[in-house]
Image (cartoon, rainbow, N blue to C red; front, side):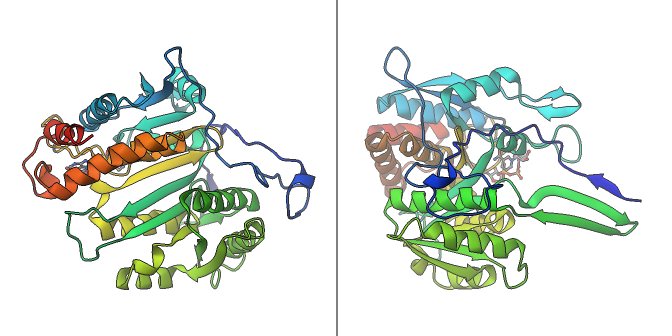
Length: 385
Ligand SMILES: NC(=O)c1ccc[n+]([C@@H]2O[C@H](COP(=O)([O-])OP(=O)(O)OC[C@H]3O[C@@H](n4cnc5c(N)ncnc54)[C@H](O)[C@@H]3O)[C@@H](O)[C@H]2O)c1
């Protein structure tokens, strides 16, 4: 018996600007839509200010250590006089038409503000609602997961000077959730790759490379084996590359990337890597390992209209409420958010204070070998602003 099990995803909010075919610099069958082709930026921030001249940002504090690390971000942003007003958002899930959904108020708030900072959300194992992180990704069509990993001075790891930038396709590929039982003991899981989603994330990769001054974009793939699926991703990359003559484009097999990166990560410091979903999930954690783990790793989930920035670690229930949490990952995510909002000078100033505090090593949290409480570490950063 064939039991088809597909994701019961809410209809993604397609916030895509569809450019007319003639505006694109390469042509495909008209049944495919274009995403912000040409000069227009993918995922451009278009938020608005409140009456005080501050940008509104939705804040999902999250579970476990979420409220403690969010407080550090709020304190440091206030001390740095960052022009931001936080709007707290409750994403406690509701069941709508039998499916896990984000409450309407929360959706409306994030849609209005176009940007959110998110603490970790706990996911019940084997019961209850589906991952809220996945639900958020689908609700806002957050098509790209952006993960920069930069070595932190003062925190010794096997390699110094790691500075990788990885972009993962976030909506399809191996995580399309299309699985079925063929017969008892035989299951099939379908990897879905579309030109549409590939083109969108690839164009974002090139635009991001331009915005951070990198001259090389590399697609990581396994088109030697998955000739059609990864083949389409790579082919789309070659076509999008023609729109960006100032950026060098090349391709590398995933296994090669893993081998070379763990042998010598240095040659990856001048590139932006972009890849399908599963490869990005695994490789981004490998990059995080190179700089000392998930506690120091920020990320951005980039959507057509709304983007959500978050630490990649979980809610750490074992240390919640004890003042032991390290807020660095959420702080660095908030720095990415500021840059997304073009508040670059504010981002630079706070980022320098964070890295100086870490390098000095006097007020580190327990996970980095120090004795400081969460708020003591935050105060040390504030003192350096
Ligand atoms: N993006 C997210 O929201 C996200 C990501 C991963 C896990 N989760 C959820 O978090 C919950 C706990 O997951 P887990 O225990 O597997 O992973 P976890 O990341 O919460 O914890 C793993 C270990 O790292 C430590 N740790 C994590 N963040 C830390 C920080 N900022 N400072 C100091 N120590 C830190 C924890 O104390 C724990 O020992 C689960 O419900 C899981 O589903 C959420």
